[in-house]
Amino acid sequence: MPDHDVRARLEAELAYHRAKVLEAAEEAREILREDLEVFVMRKVKEVFLADPAGASALSDQRLAELKRVAGEVARQQRDAVLTALADEAPWLEPGEVGPEPKGLAANPRVWAVVGRVGEAVLAVARAFHLAVPAEAPAYQEPKRFIHSRLLTTVTERYWAALQAMARVQAQLAEGERVQREEELSKRWDET
Image (tube, rainbow, N blue to C red; front, top):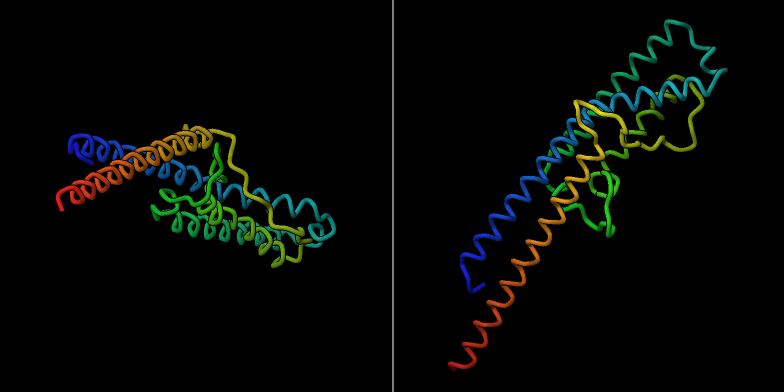
């Protein structure tokens, strides 16, 4: 890129958008920190209610144990997801994404981690001999405010920043291509 000022401006813009992506990722993790545990507990309760025979067979003591174990498993799953999503890579390099991504589910690398949380529900149901659903319940992004934030709004900001980052990266790559071409042309002419 012949103009150093343009390159410096683009690199500063790239750093700005990268910071915005990571800021949105941190906000999403904060929302997930609370919602993943709630999701597992809610789905375990649904499995319990969907199996009247199995639920009725549990004593009150065993039901209390079910709730305790479900809470532990929910926290373990939440912590595993948050640990995996602490890495910047899945947020900055989501992989193949559609033309108008929406929500966390549009990021295949993030969703591959978040999507596994439903397996915890099946594990708890099996451990307490409740009817196990054919498939693990799919995690659904919360539609409520958590810590004064709506995940939908956070992910909209995330995708906008990520797309802006990609545009700047493309401009930098094009500038480098043009500069290389100019250097090779000059070399050709001088040799």
